Length: 173
Image (cartoon, rainbow, N blue to C red; front, side, top):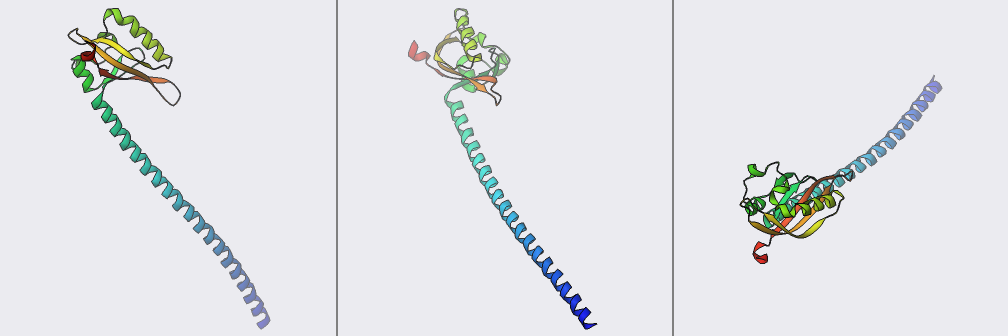
C-alpha cells in the first residue's frame, strides 16, 4: 500500500508541477498582453491629446481668419451657404436678406459672365484668385481681392466653395 500511495503522490506531484508550469506560462502571456494593452492605451491617449491640440489650433486659425477677412461659403452653383460678419458689413446686408441667395445679387450685370466662368472653373477643381468688382445692397461698387477654393470631401467630391476676400475699394478708387 505504501508503494501505491507513493506512486499516487508522485503522479499528483507531476500533475501539480505541470499545472503550475501551465499557470506560469499563462500568467506570463497575460502580463505580456496587459503590457501591450497599457502601451496601446498610452498611444491612444497621446494621439487623442495631439488631436485635441490640433483641433484647438485649427479653431484659433479659423477664428483669426474670420476676424481678418471677408468670408463666405457657397454651393458650386453660387448659392450662399454661410457668410461671416465682415461679409455682412461690407455688403450692408442682414443675414436674413441673403439667406439662400445666389452670388449673382452681388454682381453687376456686366460682370455676370465672369461669375459663370469662375463657377465653371471651380466646379472643375480650380482655385480662383484675383481682383473683382462687386456691388453692395445700395448698388455701390465694392472692389475685393478674392480667393475662391473648392472644399473637397474624402471621396474627392466638391462639397462647397470657400471664399476669402479683402476689401480694396479705398485703394482702387
